[in-house]
Length: 453
Image (cartoon, rainbow, N blue to C red; front, side, top):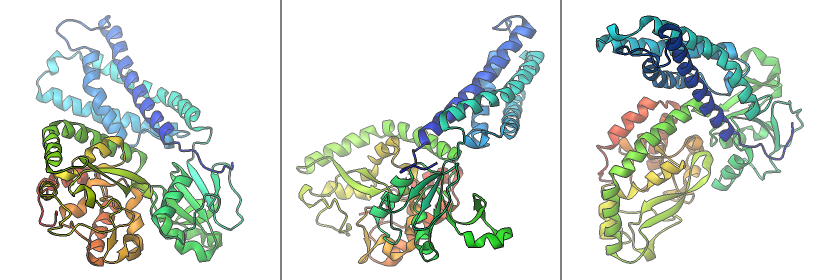
């Protein structure tokens, strides 16, 4: 299959995820309703006994969370119904065990209809198995007969394209990996669309350039090396029977991205509401400090090195605002207003980025987004260390591991950037939702910092 540009299937995958969860929850509900009818001869149960609906209400939310974390959903379940069913039933078993512990500790076991519970559980487990057929059909309808999201990126070599991949010519989308700049990274991300896996076929002398370029993507990046066929036992991965070297591995699985997005919304929405008096007070202070807009908008590099507009409170005099970030802020910078200095010192100037989180451009936790023109000493960030692009394989954050470790302020030396980069790469490599929560808590202790100016 060939095309000029692979279509993004991120929305289709999200729909499949949501529909799959809803189908499973509906199956659980129907299972316990049928148990009510079969055992108690009533849809609503009998007075004085928690009926199947109550049992369902206790189990369903826990099951959904365990199933998402356990990898029950996603395109990998299509064509693999057996494994998906086993994971779903195991998730149900864990949810049931947790419910039984709560029932025991709450001393309400005597009020339960045990037979209703057992019958409902058997019907629900059987329904989850059968539901895999329906979910698979929906998945194929949304994603196509072969729901592999793979792009073959060809750079000056002749290679056969299997039917499971989209073929893209690097020159046709204007991508030259030797040009290691923000514009090139943006064109690459735009060209491969929402691919989960990007396989590059290129001449040997271009491998190093592509190795660096692929690290900026959130997708798994591989380089096709046909010569390695004779070393097949040692291959890291394979593409259409050809061994490949895996040089970039998008750190978050699809379910991880969903969990991380849920955390962003669960924290971001209440934070925006609770902090609204602070936001309003800051806005009033900025307007009273002199003419100019309340918000400062600037282009920053986001996930896949795509540019987005970041929101901050304006802290500089309107005529001295540096939208290109050509000159970083210094201590006692004359461009900064009195109100702005306070906002920077307390990190209140960063709070409007909650809007970026709700829009999906940013996450609560992640590497801090940089402007394309930002420099360490006299060098652009990506000129200091070629690993710089690897930090863009995940959404940027309002706070991050580097910030809680004290790496803030200007980058007057190359070491200032490298210290932050080390923390960013450590975060990307070892991401977990629990680490995000620890970073959020740790951020509360570094909101005011000596290097925040």
